[in-house]
Image (cartoon, rainbow, N blue to C red; front, side, top):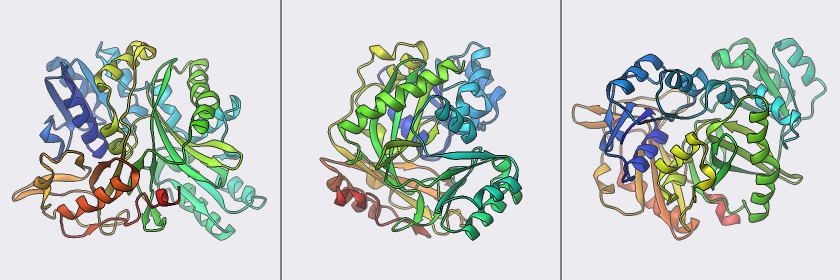
Length: 423
């Protein structure tokens, strides 16, 4: 079968790598793709938000299945466009992707259906938000309502920081239209865990757990980024916590969306906080996480095409979803200065060192073809992933592997997965 993947980051590279393992697939396209994805797919110069062009390409090439990797096209309604033209596509429709597209919607949904989450209020007026802060407890969390590349969340320790945050989000519109509404919520303490799940509208099947590192600097310092690294599984996500989440968070979310007339088919990413009062939802995403996909997919044993098709067909209950009994760690190699400003175009050396190395992977997030080879083309450049028998071995392997690659301005965190030493 022929498969089209939509997107250009490390997540899409991981998806392309996994799809290429399926014996059912004989041709992969990726739009627009990147220099690393070209190893598995023919990259096509169509942007992710060019829905009609994507659909026309899928028809022209007689694509059997399109997989939408990115949040923007999902929230924008690309699945609806494909379905209207009779094309088979994996991902939630626009009215379901709002679960990620609007934090205010998702908070209201959780409140209505008694899904555990932080106390909050929604605001579409900066003055009312500022007035609310006068009665708030600190630290407090400010969230731009819409999509902001994983960066529209501010944790404010003081009133001064919070006031500046309201100005940044709602007045200055640092995150664009995403800041037209804002959620102010209580600050939750605990361990963060990410759990990705496959959903077919009624059945939900969790994947193995993971944990992301959002801050740019060691020790969780610096600005929020799209993710500087991750590990899987989380040693803090116990069987008891899993049982609680399945009963009170995962299935209730799927049922709530169905009850609202927003049947969800695709992937729900649950960002969880393991608080003293039990697990609570930090956020929902409507697609694979990046870089969570880079540690979850290498551990997945089941044919991903079978799972995608079962989600579309409503037969996920018939799939035996299995993961390897091991661990994986991904360290992101970024450009110095990310996420604020950084230079591009530096030659990447050493990629060939990953050839035929079992259990070691390099997923491209921001790369391009240059005249002398593959060059840096983004803030997050590569995700270096390694597996091991346990998390400590996987972490040691990942940090060994980052030395196999070099480029000017290479930057990375030194403490990805350090929390596992405390488990």
